[in-house]
Length: 101
Image (cartoon, rainbow, N blue to C red):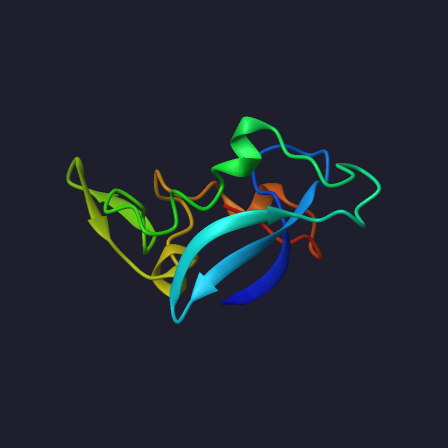
């Protein structure tokens, strides 16, 4: 069993926990007792934060709308379509800013 420390993805509090994995499969969660935010405790979302990792409904690549349909794409394609319905106009951001989708 491998333990990998990470931060909970659900809210901005900063709770941390260990993902428990067996091979390449995440099997559970263990709260981090040394984190000053959650002090070894987790809310119900934190306890179940690993459930979506292997969900068949999880998105595994970015989607782009073409002719009204969502189709799989790549990040390289997605950032090269300024002016489309997917990405706002690049010209509205300052020169040194980085857009995040």
